[in-house]
Length: 312
Ligand SMILES: Nc1nc2c(ncn2[C@@H]2O[C@H](COP(=O)(O)OP(=O)(O)O)[C@@H](O)[C@H]2O)c(=O)[nH]1
Ligand SMILES: [Mg+2]
Ligand SMILES: [Zn+2]
Image 1 (cartoon, rainbow, N blue to C red):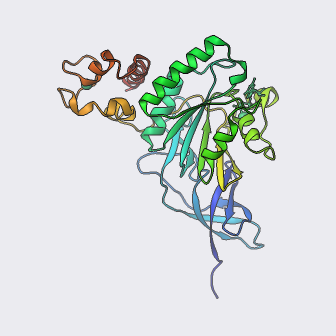
Image 2 (spheres, rainbow, N blue to C red; image 1 turned 30 degrees about the horizontal axis):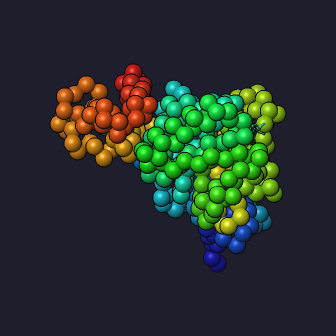
Image 3 (tube, rainbow, N blue to C red; image 1 turned 90 degrees about the vertical axis):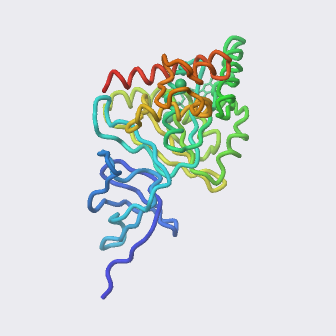
């Protein structure tokens, strides 16, 4: 007699108690996890994450499965489980691209938030871009500000796009970018992630707007990412309620490496252990003075460094 057949599939949804795996034949199975999985050196609250490729066996009845192996991850993005926790929560794995949905009004996304997101994604080797949403409500002031931010982030090496999910402006362009890839959507609650997903594929129905917000706030539980299949053989992973991206296990010296425009200059610093704060002969500080590195980005660097120093 042979054992139960092992199948392979993609984790599309994980609620904690059940993990939903799409097998290669297209069927979706609710699964449980067997055994313990760890990322080296960090404790995680969820061993199996959305985007994971797993091996599982069917339980008697062949409706449910048991996951017994996670295939090696290309990458993953994690945050701290709670603000003070030492445990990490894996947001998603095997991402091709991460998009931060930014709004300059209703709500306003700060550059500090943008930079923390980009540092995290860059540190985990996930190419990332910014999508400025709600173009339809911007006045001259917001449009000027947007142009300025476009310059800063493009110069730093991050593509920038502007859309209106509600009115449909430039949504086509985004759909093109997402094709054939696993894409993460992040951003403040209310920035329009769900609305944009609906604009990309009207058949999808993520909850938008006020009702779900109040609902969410009342729940006080971890919100889990959702994965959506989109036309053109791609996926969007919607990550609700993520306020802080944790640089969970980055060394201090790795942080400047996550600013591409600083990274280029690091070999030119006079001291190899330069922190780029006060040292003489610092190429990064010279870059800021010369306008090669934006002051906004440099200030975000200082702020991230400062937070880290406070904690350790
Ligand atoms: N004016 C305007 N409102 C938008 C746009 N995109 C989303 N919204 C609105 O912003 C609110 C929050 O959007 P939602 O997609 O739920 O945000 P999420 O929390 O990021 O998923 C909803 O009332 C949306 O209708 C847009 O492009 N323009
Ligand atoms: Mg949403
Ligand atoms: Zn330096």
